[in-house]
Every structure is written in C-alpha cells, then in structure tokens.
Image (cartoon, rainbow, N blue to C red; front, side, top):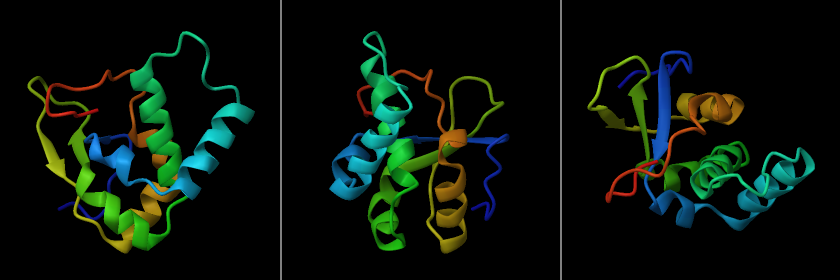
Amino acid sequence: MTTILDPTHYGMGFFEEAERTLPSYALAEAVRELVLNQEIKEDTPRTMIETLLVSKSLKELTYHDFLRIAPSLFYYERHQTKPLEVNLLEPSYAIYEQIKSEAEQYFDTSIKKGNENGNS
C-alpha cells in the first residue's frame, strides 16, 4: 500500500461499521466542533452529517482506537473514472498521523451514502 496518502490524489470513505466503532470521546469532540462552527444546518443531508462526524472524529482518535476503526476505512484515487475502485486502508502509525492532521481533506462531504454495502 501507499505509505503516504496525498489528499489531493486520494480520497477516503468508510463502511457503516465505522460509525459504530467510533468511541464516544471522539464523537463528542466531533459534535462539539460541528456545533461551534455551525457546520450542520437544518437541510444538511444525513449522509453529509455522517461523513462530517467520521472525518472529525478521526482527528480525535488514539492510535489504539484508530487501529480498531481502520478495517472500516478505504481509500481511492480521486481522478479515476467509474466504477470507483477502492482499497482497504492498511493502518500504520504514519498513516494515522497523516489522517489525524488532514482528516477533512480526505472525505468528500458531497458523496451520498453508498450502495447496499454501506459505503460512504
């Protein structure tokens, strides 16, 4: 796997179990940031809210908790044609640090909830 995931070249997504795997401390901080920055409005689609929660929660995770959620994350090349080919994220400390510092840049909040497999 690529050891460096440049957010201008790679995007990330998550399977539904990612949301269930997030620890409450990370979710609470994500909600706090979303509320303080007024990033969610009444008409914000649910899928965008879920993506914002996951991307902001990733910034708060300990490495141990990142390892627990990593199997629910995938990455893809941004500039590929359909159908989208994705790769499961192979966690490392370097990837953890990179995602922690640039999480929002990897997630496209315009992507709607994926197919029946639950991809975002």
